[in-house]
Length: 80
Image: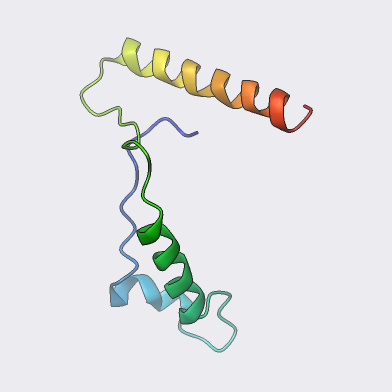
């Protein structure tokens, strides 16, 4: 997990869609609709972690914890 506050992606604005404005777009609108429905129907069990307001030392500690959690997951579930 990247150690930063979650990004707010403005997918419902015209400015966002400018990059997809061609016939070769890799993301048809129906796929976005499915993803938005999936997100809406499956909210996170707990809020995503944020680092805003943490000291530099607390941010480093959080990043270390997230990295260790990723390594632990990979070892347990991915045989890495």
